[in-house]
Amino acid sequence: MFYFFSETIPPNTSKKNYKRRWIDTEEPCLEAVYIQIPPGVCGLAGFRVRAREFNIFPRPEWEFFTGDNVALIFNINYFFEHPKTRVFIDFYNEDDTYPHTIFVGLLFGSGVGAARITPFAWGVW
Image 1 (cartoon, rainbow, N blue to C red):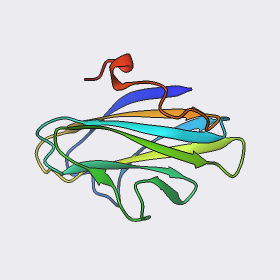
Image 2: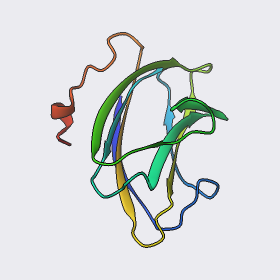
Image 3: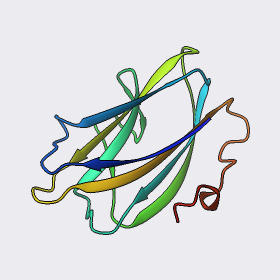
């Protein structure tokens, strides 16, 4: 199952008061994370993917992924402890003036054949 979404984070959304989305999945594995951070973010906004209280991406626990004008694919192959899992995506924006949008794709599956979808298949780039 592939989930793709964009999240616009309002200004002054701190890492401690992050904006949260979640996905309930019955797939046993998060196979890949697809990211697009448009130009202009300048490292002021970022996100992390968590299951329960643990960071799946990025590592270590206290980190968020950020960047500026990046489009990346990370093969994760993170297997969940339980068959039904709620995955959280936390976003922050430390810009005091402008909202910023981050595009995220999460590929869930069996853990075999990760990253079966190329970036061109979902039309972000």
